[in-house]
Length: 150
Image (cartoon, rainbow, N blue to C red):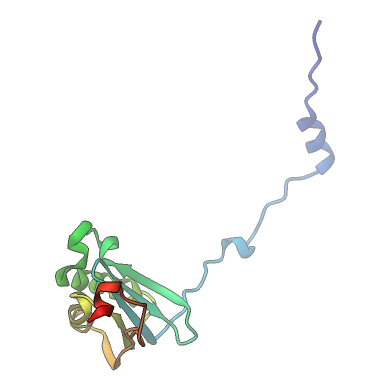
């Protein structure tokens, strides 16, 4: 003798009445993509990688790419060729949002600085302004004892 199971599903469906069908509710509507004809492009270059991000003028990133994202690994991420490929990929993603022209801000050091900007230009981006915002140390950290002795 065990427990007797009762089908509660049948009881609930009998109480609920006729089935409800969703017709044209907000769940079926597609989300509109925002359009950004003008954007701000930030190119962050280091010795090991290059990251390119597209932002609207309020600072929200809507498309980005990097050398590692394109498929380069290890020391090849820091090369100029990898930066060019990352620039092509970033512009391809940003062109889905309708980007035509942009102001470019370059930060950091590395081999990919020039080639990333050149890659964006050859991909079809109209460059309105180009500025360098590389961080500069104002005296920096205290050096080791040996360099301080000189």
